[in-house]
Image 1 (cartoon, rainbow, N blue to C red):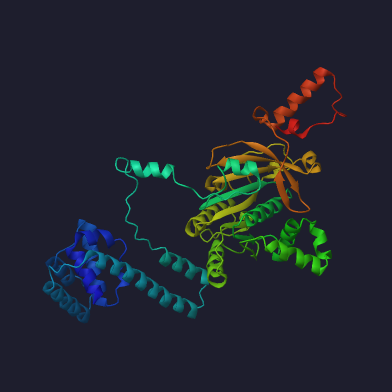
Image 2 (cartoon, rainbow, N blue to C red; image 1 turned 30 degrees about the vertical axis):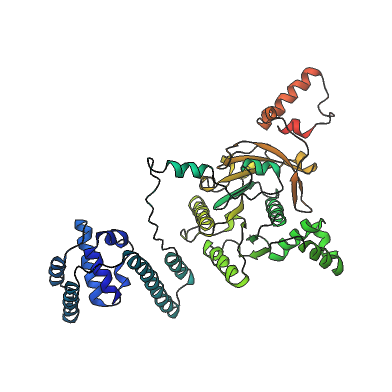
Length: 462
């Protein structure tokens, strides 16, 4: 019986003991006697930092007053069996592989039993999803970290490794990311209400699809069909409201022709606003892989403040709940090796402001603490009239170009964000408000009519 081999090697093989004692739980054993033997063995190890020998374990069993007579006799019988096999040496690679398999199989078997019982009792499915996550995340990683003395060559290779980058159509955005966003990251657009967060996320998603990446777009604010209409406007280069008026042949023909140029796919999924949690995102990723053979490179969440946490049930504390959601989304990005784009709103002070900073984020400062990249979208009335925005890098774990600003063209009617042809000299990238005031002072000195003078947008905003 393999459980007896496990107990024997925990007692006799110190390498095996150190390798597996933290992974083995009493619940993994099927028999009451085996459970009792491991419980006493583990208690001894916790106290003395080593395994008991057979005689010490035998005394512990004799003193275990919680055992009934039948279980006690079975324990004694197993101890005699272990004493008979004492000194038997197993192939460690075989033993290691079989033990890992046993731990995973038993953990999963018990999860199924527990889930069946929970279903019979009418318990919510969310609690079971947490259990299956813990089972699937069992990791027998044997590394002990980066050794400063021994890992010099390994660290050098790390510096020169080829990192997969996901570039979009916005040149300056790629630059602040060192060529593009990366897997296992969470990237955020921050903007005031009604400033084009969704439009920008759709434009980025369309750009990634055109460049050969699978994209999953999760919407919490708008229906799937409405989001699809905006994608159609982008792909067909038509205004959003004109899409329903297209002839069928024009619409179907245009998209089919476009699909011939795409090597990957786009999935749009709608979740209820502020009533769905991150477990549903994880569940969706699993279902898409199984049912559609679809594994996204980019996951867009529109937007993060509308997602619920699996850990924080009280949403009245927005700081804690949004920080928790950001951490859970980051965990999904790492677990599934995906790039995440999402958005958040500014506070009221950011509405119509000509400059934004990281402190202007709404609800929770815990969000920017968790992100890898945070881009502020600055939209004033003057910029809106010219179809432009200023994008400002507020946080950057990629290339370190913090506070870098650049102009983009934003066509709201087609959900298109693109490079602005106007180039801005580096020495003009200063605080917007102070630069505008400086311009006014200069114009006064020159006696210019500031009310009627046509202004160049780059002079006002950089």
